[in-house]
Image 1 (cartoon, helix red, strand yellow):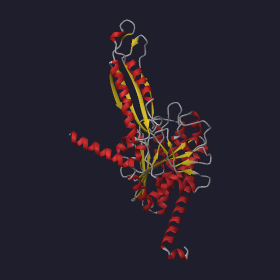
Image 2: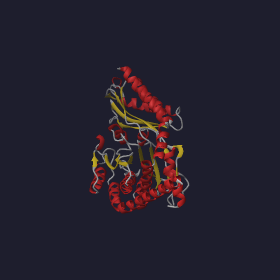
Image 3: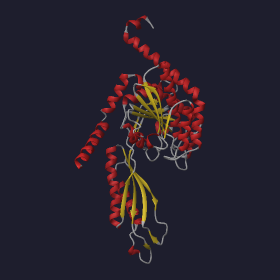
Image 4: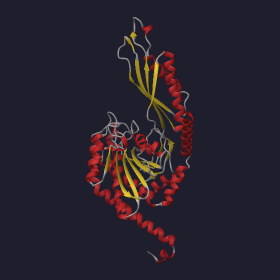
Length: 441
């Protein structure tokens, strides 16, 4: 260390920090190189055995077996969720959660690339394990296997089960096409996009059957109720904002033309930019089904499903993530795409519980191809996409290390998150609900 640095404490501390992070980067890169082929075996197995929400038994066992063979203690079927798992490392200090998804889609398999999310999460966790050990610093890391993102809300279930209790921040990254991230082909990733909050319900209409020709007047037509509800929703769409979405389908209905149907079942969801606006839209959607029941004389049962929250962004965390990523040659990662996002994620629920980042990395998919398409699944299964996932995992690892060892940075992130208007508003709403519950008793 130079004599000037020894005379000026600030310079000495900066050099010390730079040396520490340089060593961490070296260890992260070495760990990923050392384990890449073994991680790829796991990821390839996930890719060729796609599984649906809460049925990811092969993925669960394959990843758990991998870590147990390395000597880690693995909590299988974690927090009351059959296909979730948890692996922990480190001692003392703060706790950062790395979230790994691995569910697929019907018919199109891993057309959202969740096996690559698992890849990035596994590489980040292993890198942090060895980096923390080598540096001999305090800090803990949780690799949390989070199933059922596509439907069912695995992270919401894990939140309810206590998986995020004591967690100080949560991180994950997701593959994307170039068009999802930025039209500039030089851009390789994003710190965040704006996800839509969701409101989801299952609706059942109960009527009375009758012969459709001989005595239709004796029937109560559940099929008409479903049709009336869909007409109501079609009319409602004219009166909602361009950023809002309503979509759904019929799950069960009549099976004979000459019998007036006594039962129909539908599933519908609404999307809107925030929890507050989607709640209001959800009430209007619900009224469409209630009105249809009233008009047809059917009974209606409306069952709420797991809802996804919008994402709470923390500028300080996004900026640090992009700073880390852009230090790598060939990377151009932007902090956020501020346009309204078309999709939704249960990581939004997590971001209301702890500060978090849901980053994106570009994979080389054919032009015009998007998620949930066969072309995206094919692109997500290539060697190039695997290597990009490993790189994205290194960004998660380095960001997590900063959260663990940099007290000023973490305090900045935590303070910004706690004072975010969404968090403040949510706490107020939660307190109001608690007050009403107490008053009700």
